[in-house]
Amino acid sequence: MVGKGSKVVLGPLPLAVGRAIDRAVGVRGHGSILLNRRGVRMDRHCATRRLRRLAEASVVRPPRMHPHMLRHTFVTTMLDAGVDLRDVQIAARHADPRTTMRTRRVR
Image 1 (spheres, rainbow, N blue to C red):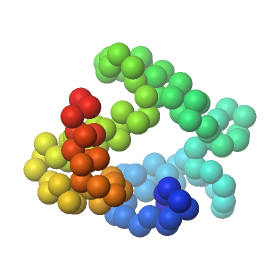
Image 2 (cartoon, rainbow, N blue to C red):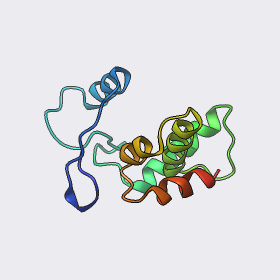
Image 3 (cartoon, rainbow, N blue to C red):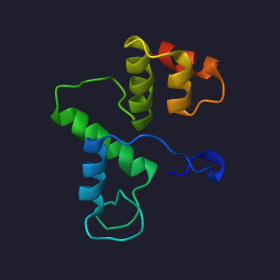
Image 4 (cartoon, one colour):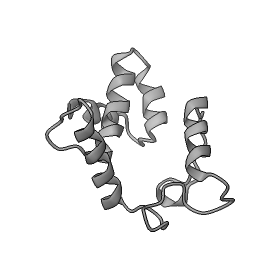
């Protein structure tokens, strides 16, 4: 994956996530993983709309669902499970542990 500043980011990939990516990519050999209905790269606005529709169709009813909320949930869940702050910081690609702790308080 390519992160901020065009840095290549390496990390573990759970099998279920790998299978989901394989299904999303299909037979394509290159290009974006997530495509919109027209077959072009999904932008952040499209991702937000899709996530809100999925939330509406489920039992999840947060007041303002947005993709970054998934990142907050990831960090909070790991910290609540007792994962070391430094490990969560690395997984979230935060340069400063205070950022990781601030993300947790957003709940």
